[in-house]
Image (cartoon, rainbow, N blue to C red; front, side, top):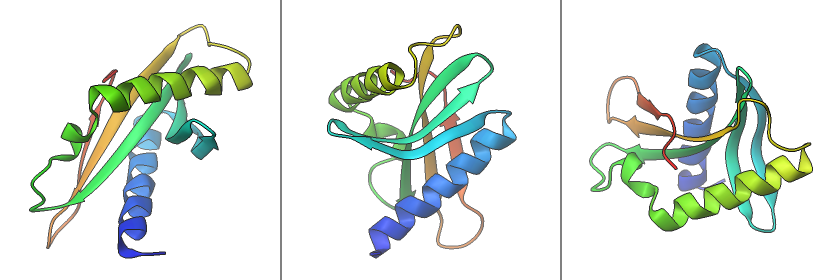
Length: 119
């Protein structure tokens, strides 16, 4: 695994822990189909959460939250529809798309930010 892949994996591990600590249940990680990949699928009460994870090293010019463009948001909605279709349809609480941003400073603990309902 290259450095970028290791950073992404570490960010996803932190995000999964953050979601679990917030009371969610992680259902799947790195779910793939022909249309793309969902980093984390979780359950939050009676809702399904499709979570995009973006990890960056401190000092990068782009904040992780800026990485979800309208095009990316459309793709996440399409992936959520496919996932639901393959897993029995929408739950009673509906579907939400969240983003977890992870910033890794040169020193100290990583900084995580969870934004609900980004798309």
